[in-house]
Image 1 (cartoon, rainbow, N blue to C red):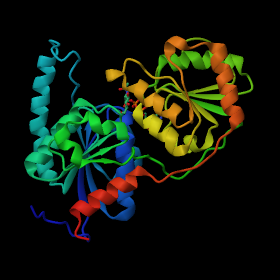
Image 2 (tube, rainbow, N blue to C red; image 1 turned 60 degrees about the vertical axis):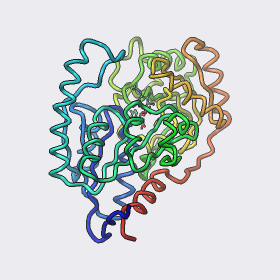
Image 3 (cartoon, rainbow, N blue to C red; image 1 turned 120 degrees about the horizontal axis):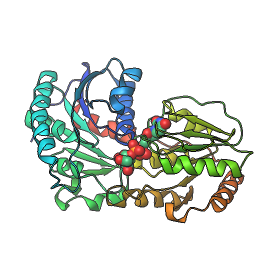
Image 4 (cartoon, rainbow, N blue to C red; image 1 turned 30 degrees about the horizontal axis):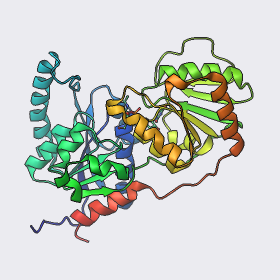
Amino acid sequence: MLEKKIATDRPLKIAVAGGVTGGHFYPNLAVLEEFQKRREIEVLYFCVEGKIEERVLPKFHPEFKRFSVRVKGLRRPIFHPENVLRFSKLVLNSIIIRRELERFSPDFVYVSGGYVSYPVALAGKKLGVPVYVQEQNTIPGKANVTISKFAKKVFVSFEECVEKFPQEVREKIMVTGNPIWAREGKVELVYPTVIVIGGSGGSEFLNKITLDIAKLLPGVHFILSTGGKKVEGDVPGNVQVVDYIENMYAYWRSVDLAITRAGATTISELIYFNVPAVVVPWEGATESHQVVNAKIIERKGLGVMIKESEYEPDKLAETIKQLLAKGRNFQERENPAKRIVDEIERDILAI
Ligand SMILES: CC(=O)N[C@H]1[C@@H](OP(=O)(O)OP(=O)(O)OC[C@H]2O[C@@H](n3ccc(=O)[nH]c3=O)[C@H](O)[C@@H]2O)O[C@H](CO)[C@@H](O)[C@@H]1O
């Protein structure tokens, strides 16, 4: 089928969904900013009420239109009684989303998972515009697998993700890497500084081990992002506690080491900015995907994975000393956002 191509001299209209957690949201921001470097764009971002995208977007991109949906994801296991109400709300929201999308009339839809991605992608399909879906993890989320069946292209971050999609969609998959939100900038820090990031929502476990380790390593400065989670216990003088860091790209470039959970986007950022790391996967994540993610850091020789059950303060302090002694080989790679934007432009623009 010969598709109508879009003229390059008018703004591109992009409908976007993906958020709730930073792991889904920041890769979208990276792609939108890459488009913005190249041409004028108009964006309608479908946010989930009260979540990260609703908070961060207006600060960095007040020019983007936003539409907030009040929704909660379905509970696992799927036959949970509360899901009856949640499912009805999803249906109602789907109708509202479709109406908003028609009104905006996008050139294409771009989604990255999380619970509004599916209704937005489906509405895009019904409207007859191309739908693109991006997966951050090694194991794809259920919504993304469903969307992949009618998507024009599927962008994945890791090679091992391809075989997790049904056979019939594999030819639409491109292994691009996970787009990185990498604006310009660095921060001035004392040497050595270790940053602790428990994903976008923080981690009580990482909060706890930071306090232990900081006592054992008084000469090391720690920055602990709690994601708003409580820090229990006395905070030593060498630990700086913050609720959330809005300019992570500047910190990734400037720290000497990171201690993190193994969310896919965090892992991709560690690799992109080449940050030595101790990675402690959250083992409750769906299908233990964080353990799979964490192993990538080991394979790349960038750091070590420690499981919660294997944690011993003295051993971890020793590992940190060794990684710090090795130093940092700062190096930025090509941003996967470029490959994704190149591909979409080739598809839809009359160039
Ligand atoms: C609990 C949960 O559902 N976790 C999932 C979620 O996690 P989560 O949102 O925690 O995902 P990631 O760890 O992958 O990404 C966190 C993002 O937030 C940013 N950040 C974090 C702290 C901070 O202070 N400032 C800041 O900007 C990081 O730089 C990164 O861009 O999405 C990931 C990607 O789909 C999944 O792999 C995770 O398993």
